[in-house]
Image 1 (cartoon, rainbow, N blue to C red):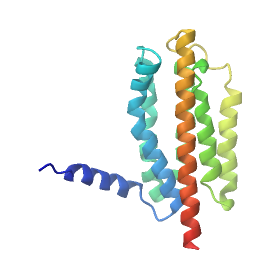
Image 2: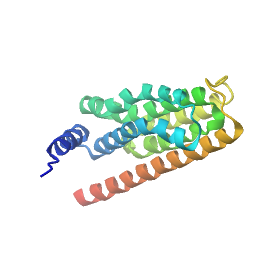
Image 3: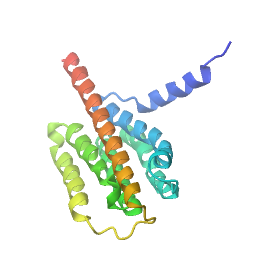
Image 4: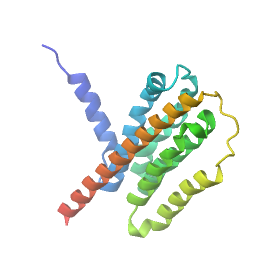
Length: 192
């Protein structure tokens, strides 16, 4: 008989790592770990949908430790941990725009970054939320056309496929953030 004990133990450890008494922190921890767990698949998506030139996607792994660190930081500094999530996302987006080029549409990931900043900070933390939202806008507007040449020039049709891939990925992430936020709202309503 097959046992899934090791898988269950690993899952339990991940769940314990993401857990936090503050539901907003736990939500950000979950989002961060989902993003980190999806990063290894990005080169495959690029290979299947865009081009066999996937070596530039390896740069995206530079942000993985930061996404994985969100729960650890949040355990000690809850607001800093929540802020690390959109900051890591903006840094990854900026690096990816440089590596792939703006035509890849990767800057669309700034939308879920801004949504996280707008959603997972309390009214008393609005200044932090506005700073993060402003940073996302500043990255988008301030770096437009300033990235220089990408590390690999894709063809026009590959860039169209890249744009579709990034639009779908960022859209899916935005929907996931919305679902996590709606679950958080329901959870907070049942507590009161």
